[in-house]
Length: 255
Image (cartoon, rainbow, N blue to C red; front, side, top):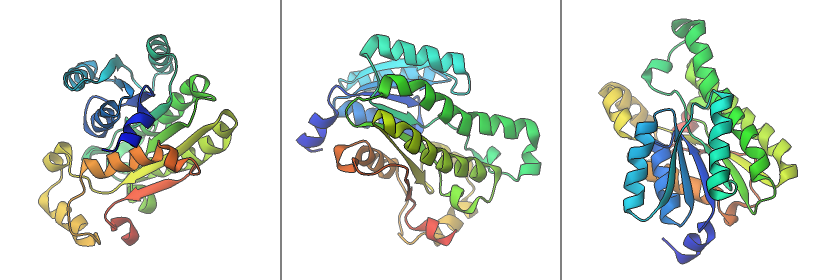
């Protein structure tokens, strides 16, 4: 890692939802390594605390918090505790989401109750957190929001894809409205990234199908998404807002 990247993020405050595992934990690790103060907000407090212990062993300054992103009161409390500890927020990463095979289903298969749950977390959660964080991000240098969409948002084959299409649209609206407070907003749309969860859940034939539709002949890794995040929250991306960046090895060109 370069010294310029380290110094750029030193002492910045990053609030990461779904921070206890997966992308959220990886984002927290990358930013903490670069000197940022990191809040790992997760509905599973035990997971956030375990991740925080790991990052602290590496010298990171980390605050684990319980937070259900679909609950306005919990989000407000988590934001308030972050401000109390660190004075404000520079980076908000709306990473928490429902995304397993269980939600990659047709609308009728999921049913109304589970559809509400899906949209409450994936869409309303990002909206609630963004609105709650806006006042404490306003006019801070290079304040940035990152939403996690998906390549499924481009073909919308399932209810999950529709929710992630909504995240793309939400990103544009946030970028337009929050510009008055000096806040940029962008989204990352991962393709098939081989996390432990994906390896455990996806059958081999589905993995083979996705890999056959990628242009690049290698597995997507967490680091690919982390590197895009680091770029988008950096000064190098200061003229970029409202965009959704596909990181899929070229798979998204087929949908």
